[in-house]
Length: 243
Length: 183
Length: 183
Image (cartoon, rainbow over the protein chains, first blue to last red):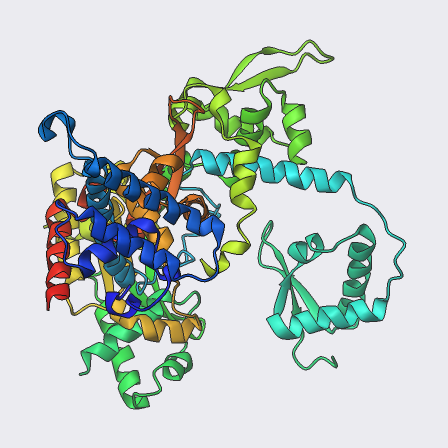
């Protein structure tokens, strides 16, 4: 984010309260290790008040830091019975958090540069022609608990859906369905057979779609192809077809 | 010779999923005269045709393509075999997830959940020692019972099978999937 | 130098769509001494790292990979008819930085550093497979713990997690930013 542009703008331009606080410290050229708490609290609250509409879900996080600032300010005003070294500076918690956040923000800047460069590189999405006889099989590289759990719960979700198939009594129009398929083919040039069926809402829809496709194939308007065994079946619109 | 042009063509052929025809190359590099493109392609063919290079550029199926040399097939096959040994397929992962969340479980039960015969992927998982046989079920045919192994726990970094992510935790992540497009 | 060895390694890296580690190369070329393999790989890196070549060999995510040069992005996108690849959102990148520097880390810890709830951007990163769940913390509520994945390394072109921007590099950025404000 370009700092000069954010000067006059609202809270949405900040990644959070730490971001805003860091911005104010830089703007005021304040030494992060020796923050004048009164000044920064005033500045910070001033920013919060600029917002006319309060989005509590988002602003709550800003208010937490406001509360922390006010707490630190009150601590600094209290007369000290012990030496400051023993008691510790009440600002220390905030300073540590700011230093850590500042570090993360700088690291993000460096990673952003690397990202920009790497996103311009392209790797092949399919392997080059391989020696015959070795049929390619998809293999998963790195698997984490997330992949494992995702696989399972998606499977369960699919099972649940299968069990509650309801054949609705909706009137089904073969013409409409045929037109729909041709429209999809014209737009996307081909469609994935299995995927298309899975997207049908009811068994009736799926069956109807299947009959339409059979008709279209028979009429030589579309052609269904499978590159090899177990590969997805793709349906293409024939060139020069009447449709 | 324009070396940048040669480089660009080289990367286009590299990234192309099918043999890349001269017409397509010209269609991308509209700023360059056809003759120069043709010359650059010829030069590339010469460079990659030499015996010094492990990768070859060939003219096949109406276009240019990078490919490996036939004499290296043996090594390439060995790499592919090794890779297969070390990794899981989506089918094996699915079987593993069913065992993890439903254990103790029999082959018939796994197959019923997955909707396909899971015996092949179960064999893979046994060979990788991610699952183990822990006895027989007291049921007709006394089928074998499967559980995840200690190696499974180590692999995924948990101490106990109770620590697997819950349905609630995973669904919370997946439900956001559609909303995340602009993120 | 054994030119056949170099060629074989070249073709192994070429057919591999993900970074190919030195260990895997050695696992295939068991007939060759390790030192010779290492030397051949270094020589290949040098050849393909030169500016003469349209295809580059890079060391990323713990292995070797052939890829195109960033400066040819425009031409490749024209061929593939692809849009520019999307960057991470500022929130997601910030969350990712916290995970990278504080790993293993829980959601609560990430949110504490950022001062905002990081669950939304964490979801994005999980779905993009840039971070992974690696178990649970032995703490009240047993929260899930997160780490960066191998894909994270490749995404940023980093070979090893140790190669993340160092403390010194970070300090340099901070000094520069301070100067910018003073100017």
